[in-house]
Length: 114
Image 1 (tube, helix red, strand yellow):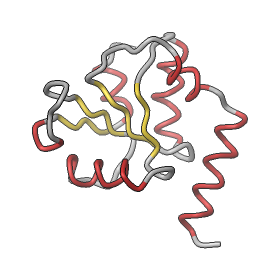
Image 2 (tube, rainbow, N blue to C red):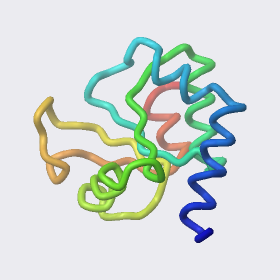
Image 3 (tube, rainbow, N blue to C red):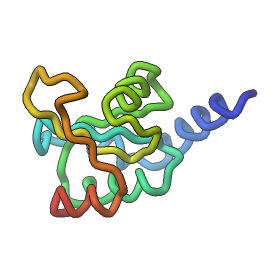
């Protein structure tokens, strides 16, 4: 098993036991122009997701280990291989280059007023 597969497996296992990500994904969306890129295995991502969950706020969440497309969006748009990352879309059909990309869990929590 390679390292990528290990982290993917670990992330799925953690998601099974910690339902915070599912709660945030299914809650009413805070803002359709906000997208959170994350990995289940990252404690910094968990910090943001748990704050969203406790505040009963929903958001689109994209796990970069679960989808190569989401990972490519993060790299092409944000130019940094780092999660958590909050994508603040300029408008509904914006290109990744038009959007603002916010990193660091504490900055994301501050931006969302959690």
